[in-house]
Image (cartoon, rainbow, N blue to C red; front, side, top):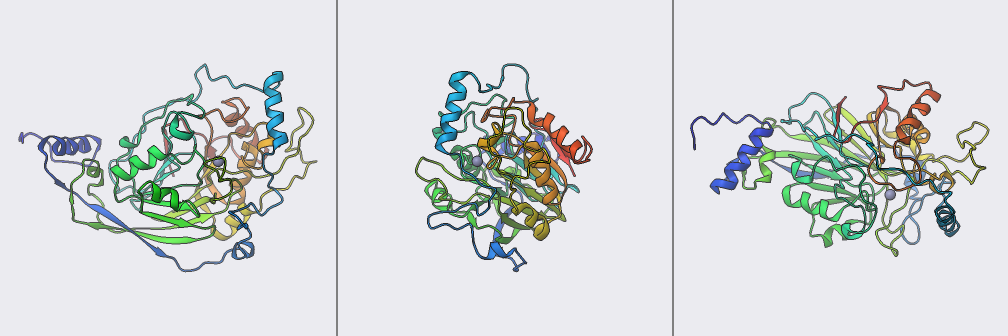
Length: 418
Ligand SMILES: [Zn+2]
């Protein structure tokens, strides 16, 4: 070894250096590996309908609220007709849309603040002050669809790939739609981070087992678990595991909970509603994060062209789960809340929040701050690709909130500390 190599500090360059050593010298290097254990957490109060499991159906699951309506055959015909007759808005993705930057991850687990990095669509990487490193709904492939050859193509680049993320302790999956759960993505994570644990919705364990991934914990709505990452002094033998290197070597603890949201699941034409969909609450190092996943908020009927479904004269049913989440699990330091894929409203409102709905979710769940997601990546619906952040500003104003600093949108790859 050349003697002028600097003493390894834990930074991106160091990780590269360690990787270089392992690759080129065929040796091992030491560092702190964390083993994650999952324990049941003490029972906490939950709402009455949660205890009754009203979301469990005879076959699979259901949204047990008046605010739900499924996309039906009539809607599908309507959307086809809108296309054929030219009535449908076809979003223009040709010009510059959402800026994309290369994410910068923290070089150490010893960090005082909560930090969230948007990796496009619904994927967030969250660095907790405890040292916990969590990844939500990772999909970094070009297309979101079966075999990654079907389905919409990205109109903004992925800001990084799985291999660029230095540490992943836990992955949280909201539901099994292709824009939230990627087969190549979870396989890469599991290979590069063999100690990573996957927290998944009830009913999705067989899919993970078929992928050969067994570090999974399947949860139902309102279930909670306490997790502990314990440092061990095992030798790091993987290039990828160099990212596990030291600085924090104390135990890392977190409480995680799976919670309701209003949506649906499906991976094929034959498994609709068969696995659960939901949201996540993670508390670690004194900070609480609420990841909403993919959700609708209210049921909007077909209205005359140009009619605003948020006009106070309307009183369309809204999903009561978010107020319950706020009451029983809030407040949260940060909410990660969807703002896109909502037009036309009478088709999508029950499954996808628009920015006005998103602000209501933000208020209901008692989030102190929020960042938007579920936009800017794939064209899934008819609204213009840059409309969600504009409508978010209008919605914030409507609710008497500042346009900036409370519920913001980031560039893809940008980080924000809280
Ligand atoms: Zn979905």
